[in-house]
Amino acid sequence: MGGAGEVDYSPAVVPSTEQQLVANPNCVAFATEADRLFGADDHVRSWGDLQRLAADVVLAFHGETGLPTLAGYAWRVALTRRNDRITQGLLYIALDGPATAAHLDALERSVQGLDLGFGPGSVERVPVNGAPAVIASEGRACGVWSREEGDAEPWLRRIERDGPAVRGVIVRASEARADDVCDGLDQIVGVPAPYGEAEREIERMRLSFALRFTRRIVEADGVVREGETEFLATVFPPDLVRRLGLDEQQLQDEYYEAARDQLRVVLGYHDKLALVGLFFSACFSDGSLDAREMRLLKDAGETLGLTREQVVKYLRRFW
Image (cartoon, rainbow, N blue to C red; front, top):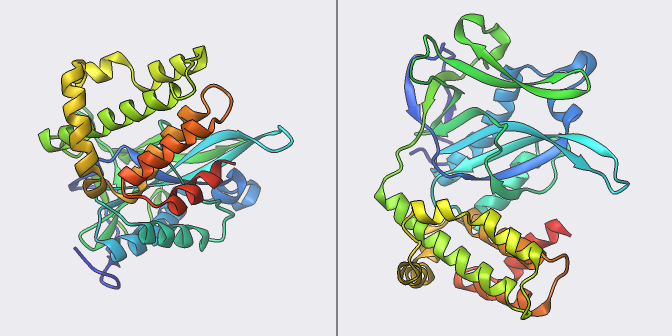
């Protein structure tokens, strides 16, 4: 892996080689006005332009951490303080490996340094409407294409303006324009990272830890309301629990105890914040915040190795 200052842009080529993508389903997402990110009228950014912006961010982060880092784009509809609907553009960053709080702060400064109005990052699942743009690993950045079994040629998914809206568009290699790629970046075909038993063990610990603390939070005030029951069923669907082999309480208990010892070491800072965000959502799932619930959230953060200040700093982004 390259250290700081050792990463570089590679010669631009059409996609010809395959490379594993980042496996982590969590990402750090940054939002801004769609017009500022994707452009509008006669200032529309091409996909190649967006690849360049993403490459600047992931190369800097990868150079600092040595971690494989993927950047992509998405969009969502949000409400302003006046309850007006606006379309936001998202830059999301996914990474494999235990990043630190200092690394995430540096990432945030790098994104805000693009001067596109991005707000503070929030940890969430990789957007379902997202389009991977650039991956940095082994000291270089590459544009990301896709290819599924049976496809005659690789394709990329780009995000673009469609009048006042934003949409995702599939572009086959034979149809791609010159501005669909960034000059100076290799273009690779991304393949899913393997998900082996070691990853499943971490996921079992994470799920057992999340399930235990979430249940304790919703039960903290002595009353489990309908909204809290729905929240539990949505976040922890029975088929997910069963798929990971955690439908037996004894196994859940064993993995929870393992999680208390190991998650602070094996999880990156952003993955810990993802759990904090989940627990905060559980606290608010009945429409109000209870001091007993918030104390449990604090206990969960400390078990994960987070300080009270780190938990409060992140939660302030939701208020």
